[in-house]
Each structure stands twice: as C-alpha cells, then as structure tokens.
Image: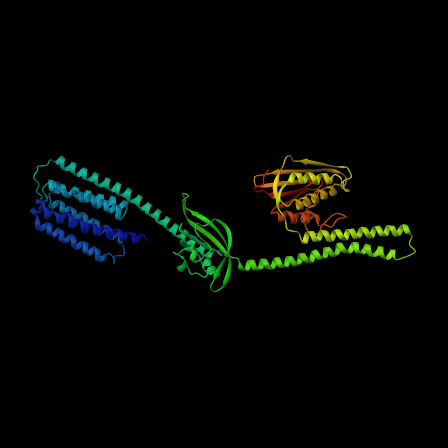
Length: 530
C-alpha cells in the first residue's frame, strides 16, 4: 500500500516537472525575456535535457524496484538543473532561485520530512558554492550591478534560511498529511470491515429484513427475505415494497402485525412482521426497517397444540363432571336401597328421604352451573350503575346462610359509576366473589368491596381477611370444578372468569396466606362514564 502511494506521488512529480518546464521556460520565449536570449543555446540544451530526463523517468518508473532512492535521484538532478538555470540567468541576480524552494518542498511531500532537510542542505551548499564562485570570478557569470561581499553573504543566508524553513514547514505539513492519510485509511478499513460485518449479520439473520426509503422503495433485502417471499434481491431492490408484500401500503404503520402473503409456488403464507421508522444520527426519518418471519408452520403447530389442549381440557372436564356426579348418585343409590326395606323405622326413612332430596338438589346445582359455564347466553350490554349492583349484592350477602353474623361487610365507594355491561351477569360475578369470600372466613372477618375508576378502566375489588390461598392452589383457582371446600361445585370462580372475559375485562387474584385475599375485576370504560 505504501509503495503504491509513493509511486503515485513520483508520477505526480514527473508530471509537475513536465508542466513546469513547458509553462515556465516555454513562456520565456513567448514573452522574449532577455535572460534567455543571452544564452539561447544553453537554455535550449537545458530544456531538451530536462524533457529527456522526464521521459526517461516515466519509462523507468514501472521497472525500478527501489522507488525511494529513485525519488532521491530525481530531486538531486532537479537541484543540479536549477543551479544550471540560475547560473545561466545571472547567478545572484537570477529570478529562478525560488525553484530550489520548490524542490525542497517537493522532497518533503514526495518522500518525507528527512528528505526535505537533506535537499535543503544540498541546495544550500551548492547555491552558496555557486555564488562564491561567481563573487571570486572563478566561474564567469556576468551581473550588471556591482555587489559587495556582505550582500553576497546576506543573499546566501536568506536563501539558506528560506530553504530550511520550507523544509520544516513542508515536513510538518507532510507528516500531518501522512498521519491524516493513515488515519483515514484505517478508518476506511474499519468502515469497510464494519460494513462487511453488518452485511454478514444481515444476511445471516434467520428472519427476513428489508429497509426502504421514505417512498417505500427497497434498499436492503436479505437472504431470509428472499427465501420467505420467493423474490430475488435483484428484483426487490429499487422497486416498491408493495410489489413484494402487497398488503403493505404507504404511509406505513409502525408496530407488530400479521398478514397473509400469496406465493405463486408455495400458496398462502402467514407473515408476522414488525415495522419501524429508520432515522439517522440527527433523528431525521430516512426510511423504514422491517423484520418479518414466516409463521405458517408455527400457526399450524399452534392450532394443533390448541386442539390437543382442547381435547385434554374436555377429558379433564369430563372426569371432573363424572366425579362430581358420582358422589351424589352414590348417596342417592344407598338411600333408595335402604328405603326399599319395609322394616325400617319411619324416623330413619324420613332422614333418608331428606338425604336423597338434598343430593338431588346437589345434582341439579352441578348440572345448572355446568350449563351456565359451558353454554353461556350472549351478553346484552347496557349502561348500568356498578355501585347500584354492588349495593344489591352486599345487602343479600348480609343475610345468606354462610354469614353467621361474625363477618363485617364494608363498602368503599360512593356516588354512581356507569359502564356498558350485562347487569345480570355482573350481578352473578359479584355474588360468586362475595359468597366465595364469606365462605373463606369461617371464623369471621372483614369483607371490603371497593371501586377505583380510571381514565380507561374501572377496577372493582373484593378483599377478605381470611386464611388466604396457597401458591399451588392460586395457579388453579379459576379451573372448572377446582375447589378446596367440602361443599360446592367448583364452578363459581370459573363462571365469574368467563363472564369477565366476555366483557373484554380481566379477573385477577392476589393472596397473602394467613392475611388476606383480593379478587380484582378490571373492566374497560366507554362513553357511558359517570
């Protein structure tokens, strides 16, 4: 790399020398400068010699192995040619002593700082020798003005000073330029490596990736994107993304979405994509970036898992129903068998009849609750006052059989709170949660019912001071037929959960064993706000 850069600089030196000879010396004939007419033959020989050397340098450039010393030879010969020109054009009175400065500057730029000082030293010595030879008439160089010795010495001093200052400045600028060039070259390599790395990362992504300009024209289209869409990169890049993904349209909407892509060779594909705005370092939008995946197999697998989960749930539900029905049926069977005995006293017969009737009621309740859970009637939303429904429910809870008078019911809400909901179904949810809380506090306690209206939602809380729910039971609390009580079907909380889901809400539970349990209902608010 360094050899190539040096070769380029030496080519520039050869070209500059040819231009200099042509413009500077050739123009002297055009303007008929008398310096050159004093020794026209010598000037002609000098020009021919310099052209010959320049042509020779150009021919030898690609054959010379040591370009560094080749540059030194050219610069030394340039100094010699300049001294010849200075001697021909008057020595101390010559206009062309500045050419030595150009050579020193060239050596600093073409070679290095050290070469600049070497050329400055060679030029200073040779120029001083030339003027001394002129002053002492050892070489005949005519000059019109009689010059004193001190003027000769001052001229030599000024030129030496100028040559070394030029070497210093040229070397300084050359070294700075070289360091800058190396830094830029290093950064360029780093940028190329980074670009290559980014390209490798983009091409190695298992997900499809594309970027577009603000108008939707594709800029990057990686390998995975080609495999998913079946569109080659050469066809996608530069064209509108709508030609590849027709379901996208400007202006693009940021975020996650799923759509169906029609592929000519593979039929329909379900595409999941996440699209974002692409911005530069200043925050200005420069386009869009999108990562997408083929979700077809995933969706098929997901559907298969859901089918299996559905059948597993049906199997579990059937087992639970069978278990719940078997117990009262066994009691009924035993009671009826004993009632068949005619010798049984009337007192025992009456007791068995009570058991049979109770078990029939239990069977009826199981079937009723199951039908409510499995075949819910469609909700009929109307504007209802949640606080009024809660007041009705709490009034009924004070007088139920499970409340032995040792439970305090507190209400933490006032005024009206209107939402759009099915009043009958919400009333059932509040009743189930209230009864569940009272039954949990066998030794008495406090049931606190509160509401918390927000900007977009309404929260209703049922908090009891019972023994709480264990972590293992908490995970299954909303499962059908799951219960920790001796009595009950285990469908109350499942039905409540289903009803809240039908209202696009959430039913959550938090419990601290030995302290409290909180059931929270979160419903979305609508225009019917109070």
